[in-house]
Image (cartoon, rainbow, N blue to C red; front, side):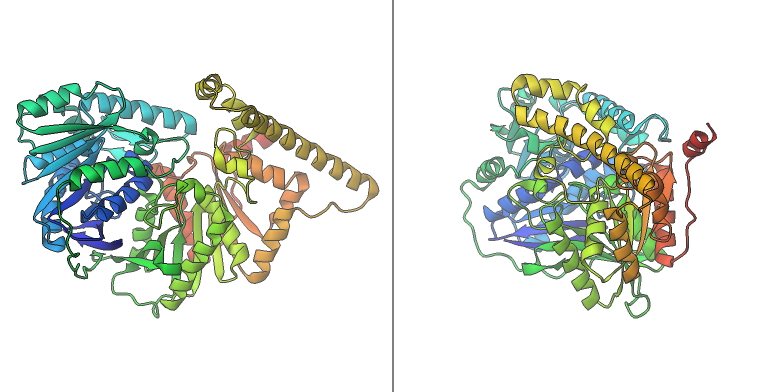
Length: 590
């Protein structure tokens, strides 16, 4: 199966192709936050469609993903619908298909039906379609409030009146209004001749849509999902939904005769007056992918600096709230290149059967980062800086320790410094890398008790939480005992493992900077690693910048500015005095 980067009219995409065929597929992803959360399943789904003999175009709407523009710009929703028709025309020209089917997920399904009324579409697959826009908007507002509450009331947010913000993604007020007006059960636009409705088993919520489609003259089929969690945001990233994907592909390909693949021409990447972006593949068998963003017209000989952005959790290379795209393009405007890369199992790199959980917090992914550095060095870059948030910060730190070619690292709110135990990788509800308050809060969540009542949480899972709490308190007690013993005996305490690691980086000339947001568990992690006076050992080894009003992922408007300021200072080699939060000043004053 071949996957090739393409672009058309400011939109970036991937063309998945195995054999050719008379029918091609344009995939209509959900919107922003949901699109990012379902990206792993979406990418694997495109592969399965291509393997069934359906040339498939997976693309980013204008202002989303790696495409040009801003998703919160006025008219963005209408522009996204219009781009579906342009994608269909592009697929016909590029892959040589005679007809096009649209496959949409959630809001993307509603957009697909609207786009189908404006273009000649042979079939449509609607996966968990949003039936009524008002319900969807209410859900998104509630989700935004839940995530904002999780981050804390002290985080400043300033969405425009009527707009919605979800973890850095913003839905403009005019888009909110346009989406709220959608009602697929009362549509009066032309339908594709064949429609497949895909939803939860036993659910009758899609019956009104089916009746509307039948009245409009469409031939309607229905498939129940076997792997519902893979088609929406989930607390634990699920494995790829292979069975569901293959059943949908079989419905689309029924009665079609495969033929030789159409040769895909080389298509230049996206360019603006300030930057040029191209997709690159690297590592063994080119299994890893990324987006190289360069200053327009600049050559590596002119500026050999490059910043590598690493995945945050299961998020693709665009970053939470699409922040890495914004940062990369802003860097290019200032003359610095960057690589937004995906590790194995995440984003657009080769998928893993266990899903993103096979990649997050695994030290094996250090090899992926080194492969990216290999490619960059061959391309002429030799001043490499690694940037990561949360799990990406963990990977940046581990990669710097393993690869002496890393010159600088900027790590924000690292989840931990050392490789986690296996149980921490399996379930974030019972994982052992959160803060003590985080563990205790888990015990009071409805999710915990629902899972306990259903039998989903085993005795071993419950014991892992208890063990984490005991170990955390035991480590603090041991550290306090060691400090007291050292003071009595007059001997120095053993060096913290973290200080030893930072000394290793310092000897190599690797500069490390740490960003912390107010109330983040990373504060407790740092305090556990560096109890008491050991914090003074950081001087000259690690610059700590504390931002009280930043969110965990640094995606709110003010936090993005703080993050980019630290990034600029890092790559320019400018010093930063140790900063303290207003809250920290108040604690000392008290």
